[in-house]
Image (cartoon, rainbow, N blue to C red; front, side, top):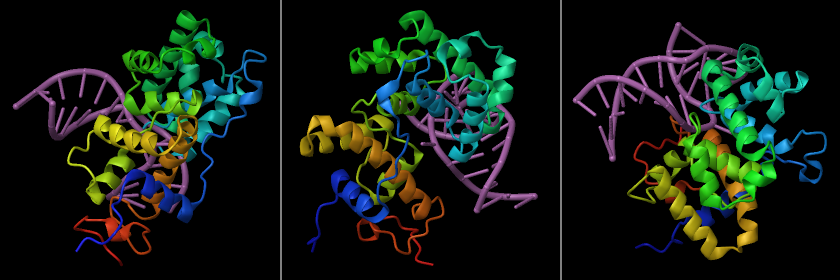
Length: 239
DNA sequence: GTCCAGGGCCGTT
DNA sequence: AACGGCCATGGA
């Protein structure tokens, strides 16, 4: 009966990449950081916090405001008035809490690492993760986004889209964050070399977002979905 | 007008 | 442990 390929994360990755192409999320020029105190990795950290439950188009407006105010810098965030910060990031929504969250992580990086992100990222991965999770306003997805997209670490980021997708594909009984992350990382680290994992997790997460926007919406739009044949979601619709 | 976005915290069960 | 309310703006 079951003559199809057993679906698994690395197969989904290949299907999505073939269908959607590379997504180019947070493409950083890593060649010239920490020149004049400004580090592009901190911009990614800011983006990871501002995009919490928020459309990226709104985050971009806030980032532009911060850049024009010369605020994409740890010390600048530490030293600025929090009310000023709120106004700059207002377009990204939840600006009261997010302004405080930016303050919190900036102060932490200054106090513990003297604003040197190399010191932060060049430590044991799980230690860095736990440290981020201690900070108020940094949950698992934000922490992992920082480690992957800013720190180039081999960590797969799980978000609401990922849970929805894996739930509908019925790949796991347990849909919790840690469960999905372990499932994907086990599969990928078994199939691909370690030094390629950061780039692949980066791409996979972005591809899942693209897939969820095109097809696997809350109200699904399954016509043309490249993983339709693997899907067990009872309410899938072909319009 | 309604829905929802690249979550996380906090209070209640 | 699990769940619901809350936070806020802007585009579809």
